[in-house]
Length: 310
Image (cartoon, one colour):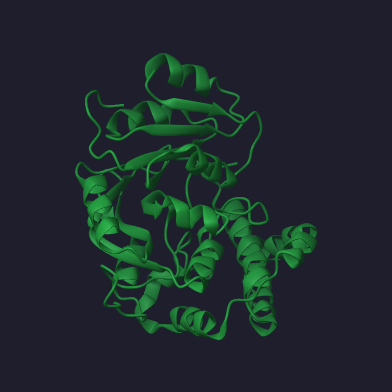
């Protein structure tokens, strides 16, 4: 972590990782706020490497893989009012977190600030950014940018208390698309999620990902999220749509079956207002190609969301 005073005393960065020491070696020196690193049972010596190279970082060894739920433990551990998420191959631009903290201070209903994410060495904007900027939900007067019902975890700063009150990320989805259920729950509590273009995160995705595996995982998790929070007709349409996607969709549906009892126990459909907003997002033509991008919270086939593979 960069030596000296943190960029802002109000933000902690929470990173989850598993077997990604080469990525962390590059990303961790770029963080300018205190970092809590949650290790999801790495087998490559990651915790020891981090402690030796970055002694200021708070490393928590979980011993096994908790997926996205590991982030909840980092948020609980943090003592700052705001928490910024990062993956092991992402970081926040200089000044981004101090700007985010000021924005969150100024907009008390804002629970999630979704930032602009620049991808790769050429720093091209993630396609989701254009989709969020053109959100059909518009900009509410007490929020700093367009309202959204999805976000990328590695490009989000959350209000700590609101995140924990909403239950954080859940073990039913586990990993991949975990943002959607949380977004619906925060909106159901009357809290805001907004895209703020001038807060910037940078993401250098690790190579060697299995696209088919991510597609299958995305279909599984989208279906389980629908079971937990959407009306039954939406669940049925989601399942039929997944099955028409070929092998990844079929595998995703089959993988959802063992988790259905837990999803049903967690079922609390959102109210009509939030469901109407979600349907507006689902059908908005302005989302264009971004709505089909693997990993987009609006995606029809989610192949990735975050990078610390479980």
